Image (cartoon, rainbow, N blue to C red):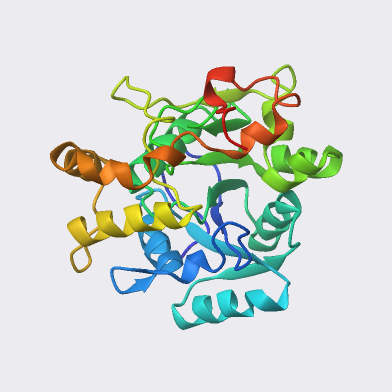
Length: 279
């Protein structure tokens, strides 16, 4: 594939989508290998990301830990490009994966989002491409309105490099982009809201951190997946409207995110987006 992708309004030479993945999840170890529709979760997620019309190059960024040799093996078996980097410094891993790939812009998508919608990816990236002179960073999660599990962030490699050089706090290194969020006076930050006008970010949980999340996502795949079929967010929402009982599987986990562990440090996060009743 040519490095120069012609996208209307896009003057970037190369955008690289980085899917961060590792074996050692503390809450659900090995979750990226759990089966969805007959294939490992990471592979199914890769397929969904690759279905976006704006995807140019996709890299799975895993760690140098020996336990993640299995991630590398999975990538090799499925023809997926990979990068190995720092086990806990996600900012370092994203930046160096971008540098190695020759990226002008980096897209951050975590591997616990196997239901991510290609259309959501396209909407965020196309907004960024159309406003390159206006924004250094664009996401759909600051603040979030889409159902949790549709996280897309894109930033110029220059912006990421500044964060990489200057970030000092552990949570800034671990979560890659908070250094950028927390400096709106310095970085031009754009946000893409869900076009429905609704905010389901705290009520609908389409991400996988716990066993109940996996059970829920597996049910979605069992209901909607057909061979080579990339179902969309609208299909998921219609299914949940028809079968609201599915929501009960992981409803008590809704709204849980890492923000709750850094309440005093995150000044630009809406307190309403931080669930404080669970640690």
